[in-house]
Amino acid sequence: VTDLLDSKIRSFLVELVDAAPPPPELEEIKDFQLGIEVRPNRQRHAHARSGRRWLNGRSALLAGAVVCVAALAVGVAVVANETGSSQVRVPAADSTTQTSRSLASPPAVVTGTEQTLDRADMPSDLNMYFVPSSRVTNYTVKPGSAPHAFVVDGSPVFAVADVTAGGPFDDVANQTYPGVLVLTMPVSGSVGQGISSWYRSDAQLADAPNSLINEWDWPVPRQRWIWTRVPASAEYVTLTYGNDVQLWQRPLDGVAAFSFPIPDAQMNAPASPSDPVPHLVAYAADGTVLGTVDASPR
Amino acid sequence: MACSDGEVYRKHADELIRFAAAVVGPDDAADVMSAGVLRALNSRHWSQVEQQRAYLYRSVLNEARMLLRRDATRRDYEARASERDLVDEPPTPRPEVLRALRALSLRQRAVVYLTYWEDLDPATVGRLLEISDGAVRRHLARARKHLRKELQ
Image 1 (cartoon, each protein chain N blue to C red):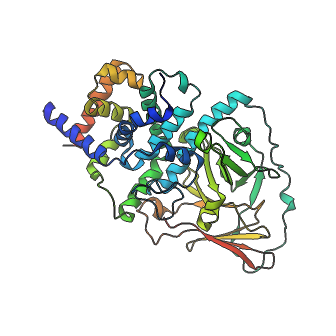
Image 2: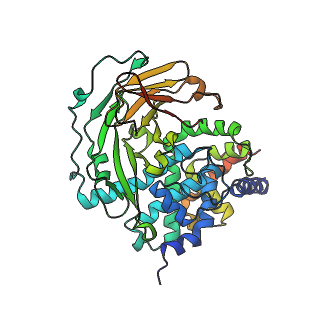
Image 3: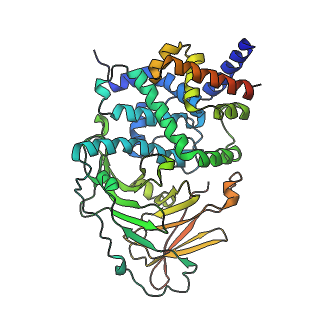
């Protein structure tokens, strides 16, 4: 009986191991840390529009965030150790400027329920990532810009910053990659420790779907969509998601973010190409469309 | 003479990707392995680590743990989605194999892999995972119990 079980266990392992992908090249891992789209130099089942093509499509969205957490979690330790966690070099965002937004009624084309995007105090745990450090969190806030923290509909605080990413490794140390860094505080201890992060280079952001960043507010089954490059003169942004979700918002600092539940139908059934994807539209004060963006189909 | 990070990585990459596939399944193996390797290489203690292989194994296992803790529900959802989305796939394990994998705790998966695939004795497995021999045996016994049921 034991031999039979051992044989089955070995077969079980063979099946798993045989399906393992080839190990990534070290250079791919380094690039992955920077969030840079990696050359697709091997056959992988890439998600149709995944920003990181060498990731498996099933988990690209998820693992991108999770692995960045891993990389940045190291950064927390390093930065905290090197700078002291209370040392804040970048001023926290002003939490009192919400009234700077126009309070005029939106034009008729802007329909649905208003979902307010509010500024939040920059948590020191996030702020430390914007402090230049020596090795891991090698993001530098672009001169003249400042990171901002936001909250929408009670979801976890997130921060957005225009940054340049430089490589911590020798072969890319002299290169920098301008882009956007989005960090989110952990929802709660029940989902683990760490800070979720997304980095998108300007090149990636030029591809409209890539300028939409999706965060999942686990364990609460909500999804949050962050548009990091809302056209500068936009006064309103709308989000349409299927037939049931129609929201609008006044963007702040070129950022719009919406949070809404994941439909039960998606939670409890396989995804389908017919599942809705968010459609966002930026409007000027007079209702002129300034830009649109659709999330990549899942 | 100390090896460079690249040399260390190349030396262990194949076994680490197998290990990752055995503990989280092939789909997430590359991501978990990458995160684990990154974490290890970026560790401020890395240059002083004597047992680099063991350190890499534990780092990969930690990433697997983080992945599973954070994303159990979502991964389920995405796994179901992938069954419909992906057509030109490399061979993937049968559903019953993945179900058997999910029946094990992460540590049980690691112990099973290291015991059956790498043919390591409990003492060596214990050193790799920084747990006692007894704990290795307990994890292995429980894993076998689960697998007996799942693989019948």
